[in-house]
Length: 71
Image (tube, rainbow, N blue to C red; front, side):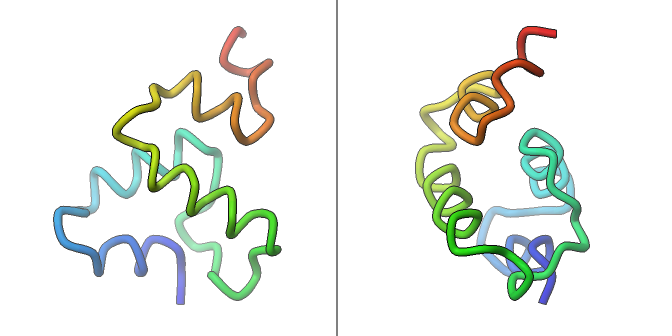
């Protein structure tokens, strides 16, 4: 199952919200849940829990893309 399929199955998660979230963390919509490492799964879960409290720059910093947020 792809990450986007999983997110789309959740209430209040439409195509646009899903695409924006995955783009903000530089993850492909087609990436499968099974191909994620344990660290990626935990990071993704933490970002989803905190999404209402983090802006895009904070999300990038959490996953190690802080230098891209400043570019």
